[in-house]
Image 1 (tube, rainbow, N blue to C red):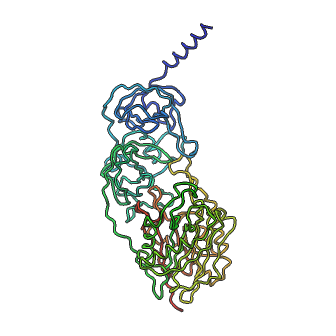
Image 2 (cartoon, rainbow, N blue to C red):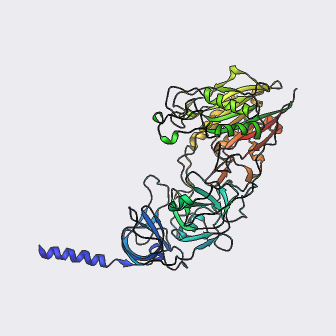
Image 3 (tube, rainbow, N blue to C red):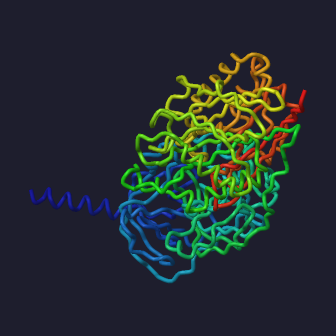
Length: 577
């Protein structure tokens, strides 16, 4: 027995001593996955970034690609930035279990760490942007089985720099700083989709792969500057390339210095008059008039104060002043009178009373409203909030035919907001409005993920909802169909399949005036630095020549938002006949 015991000890000791010593570049090789997966190796590098459960090291010479490696410790690391270490451990490829579409990253696990030296100079950062590397316009490789082609696509570009120090000098903010302290920039002022507001708009087959996510080092959060707005820039950014939650990001290793840009106040140019009717669509983001009782909500994050924070007053200013007091406003995400509190209350009367009162204080008209309450907790959205579509209208300008106000239901709108139909007359002309809030995209696969093209959440439901709207509209008589306006938060791009269904149906011919704007100006929402038009006002072909539309970016460009969507306003030339 003793012989067997000493044999096993000797065998294990020999196996341990035989761990291969490799450079970080040798570990990665030229393929997407390390060639030494599940093998124990030894490597050396300089610690460049320390996080809560691991750290990044980089080869002392950064002349080669793929010089960075993640070391996973599972606990707070005992190393410090600038230390040169030798690490023995096993190489694994991992992705979070709850994010199966993310890219897998190579990391060294169960490390045995030896500190070789302290206070070492960090490897020189790789310059990205003018004078350095350019991010390719193409997002992903054609085949993830092939070796990396970093000059060909953005995913491979960042994969070769993963864990390495990089630097941006030229940069422009294209997505305002989020509550997670994420800021999206581009490193090239000549970006092909750059609009006059400084945004980069999504185009068919072009989701702006050159966008770069900047995130401050968690240890430096207290020194984070004022949140950035679109058009601002940072004096310079030096940091480590990381991958988390479906995105590559640069974790800044220093306090960021924000340089504010210049932006003109947003003001609508369209006005209503005796011959022109003004119609708007505005998603007001879970609007309610109370501070919720924390004991009656599902999550503490559901407690807000739209009145005390000034959000209601700002929404009212947008409507009364910036949007020039539209005659009819289709609202989305109006909550019931006690917000996210999960009670029997479903009426939004208190919410709409508060908004209308604030509009009057801002100099606007005393709107009347349409609220068709949903069945409790049956239409999706924030639990307890009972969000719904509603209308404000100016009775001095339009007349409501209340007997023709209804909700559209059916399988397509299961656990989703029901469209609200309202019929108005202006200068004796009938107008039928259908106010929508299509199924949301939450849970969609990431752009920088392993599935290409990424699958969008609930895309089939949005197509079914578009078909349901067309079925309803096809039942209208020709006069009412000629006065049809389909509007709201459709949660999809102007070139998407649901929008194509709505605008290419000959039985119910509709036109999308968003497509009359320059492509780079088509946006009502910014997500991860991508400006995109997901709110729309469609008009019948009979109204097309009478329609003029503008999008007012009062929210999307700024981190201080009254809503996460921008309003749209359309003016229709409808003189008395």
